[in-house]
Length: 82
Image 1 (spheres, rainbow, N blue to C red):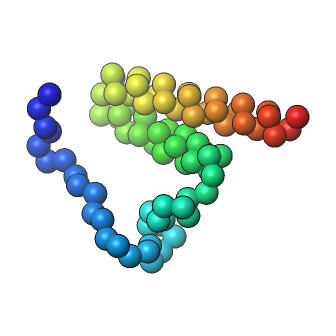
Image 2 (tube, rainbow, N blue to C red):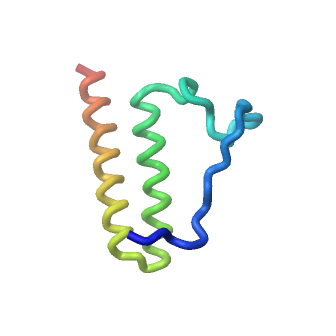
């Protein structure tokens, strides 16, 4: 598989985030419930982006990830209620 040109690289600095919009350090991101909620929300935005640019396969795969995350949210909330 060839490497895509123009890809973005993630910057890594040793410092803590200065604003709430920056990514938190490991251990500060909450538990599994928060992670699944964040993933579901983020993937939903990515699905819209892929659809807008007519990236059908990518849109489909991201949609599957979104469904999986939403299902995990539903099953976790059902377990907490019982």
